[in-house]
Length: 208
Image (cartoon, rainbow, N blue to C red):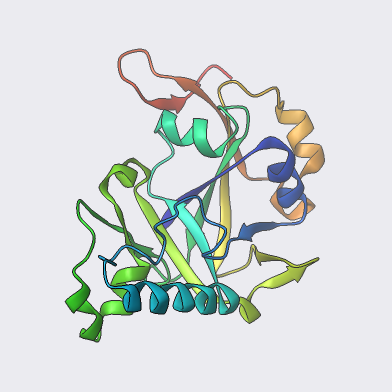
């Protein structure tokens, strides 16, 4: 399975040089409804969920991917207004990353008793995030590499770097990128992105 991960220029180049991507924790994601996507008018449920979120954030890390690299909104939000990078990663086990379910309403509180409730909560987001076409890989933090309190997933046989896409407003050149890349990745396909001529998509710049 091939999925995509967006990065800004500074940390993107740094992580490519170190052959890794950053893992987040659930308390550091940009959606305040993470793990709180259930109806919480009952105070006991609110307290329990907040406690659970702190516990999950202290034990688990998350890698966020997209199914596509053609959406200009994602480039704007996650690749520094198209000045950054997007990388293509191939996952050896397609079941490692799970598809996010986008919902219009908060989940009903009665679902708490459902055995599948924890997984459903981990993979549910408000429908307006649907443009991301997100997939998530969730692992215990102890399974990531730690560097000064930040967690990283190295590129390896399970998650293999296969392509690098340079944003359409980036000043990164192919040569400067090659200088930053680890020697193991210098034969990778590197392409430039551009705005499409007939649609609102980001596409490959064939003349660069």
